[in-house]
Image (tube, rainbow, N blue to C red; front, side, top):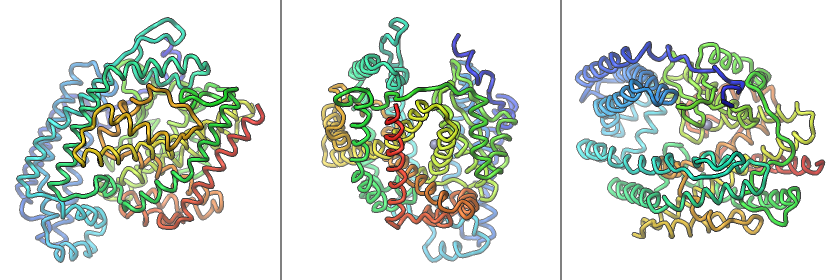
Length: 595
Ligand SMILES: [Zn+2]
């Protein structure tokens, strides 16, 4: 089989840092439940009422509990993601899901009691030096105070969770099981959505267009169900918001990102003002491809020459990128590899995509990816190690509760690492045609995260507004809004096919976390800003950046980024970011000039 000849063959996880076997994991779940019960008995009614020392002790004990739970939980998830067909794995995953829910119910009182404290009492605790490591997270948690319901009502809402997740599962299952017969060159075979989408990078135009047509044909059969799932979830979220008194449907996401609604709106507006930059590239790309106008299927069509990158070359490249920046970061990468915390080999029964998971202060993060010798995979490897190095440094310095950041800041180090690795790839590339490909790919991936993810967020805003006015989110209504928002971006620089009307129906973010997608735009722009700072003064920048990584989620995004010289309130920050973005597009244009 082709897969076994890939260069990452055999690069698999060693899960022994998580648990010895399923038997041990089961035993640990029972112990964890007993510990949680004892913890609740000792502490119920006493959160924040026994002085700062006692609260610190309580939070430290809770951190220990949660780290053990997250380690055993990830043991089950990791097995599910690498040996999905093993019956023992499936039993363990079911057990883990149930136990996590039990644990959450047992421990819910800590957050609720913390919110129930009066402001004066809470403020006095937040000033206490003993609580310094926890203070920022505790302060952020209290922002939810006005919207939290009494414990019984919160428990009742929690109890509905399985019914709500049923809509999410239905949406996911419809997509995961959807296959369409398509001939990608080796005869007609059933294709999943992901496989059809991978043809957008195919050099042959007919294949690209036909693959998208096949995709739309498939989506047509599920779009009614997908719309019904989305309608149910948005309707539910809005009615819970009303119960809580939350006015703005973006508030829960903004709050978790610790970003003000107006900072997010200002960023999105400024992104939209730069749409002509994207259109300029589409026009240029059409010329390169010898077309009057680009079709959607040509958006990611390769220009220049592709090349393969073997696993060892990819590792050396990412290692070298990190080492030149700050040797400690490269040492972390090597340690993860040596301890078997990287699973890179694509194989059946393994989850697609890529992620990094960190379970505790004492276990190194685990990385999953599917390395297929493509240049794109090198970028993914750098991205995931951006997450790994951030998590390791933050976990070293911060309390477990304070290490993680909101989504938006979490994607900054990964995007920054990815940008550095791509710069290195470009600098080392001797073949002008491959260089042109790399430059185009860098510009296009910036467009995909900055422009396209903002289009997605605008689509969601309109969907929530319509549902809020009592209009059902039918397939037709969603398709109309989808087209309008996409046209605002593409203008007449690119032709959208009729079938693209259903483009909203396969985006999982809409289903799982509302307004998730603007985090990608934010992270890419901040990473561009950081890159500009780095180039200006590397000596000063590197230690400040390492400080940013080590601070984890112990401060607000504004305060976290301050040492690096990036000020989120200053319009110059976004100017610097768009300056980098424009440079990427200009270099992509110069790259294709030579072809
Ligand atoms: Zn990421």
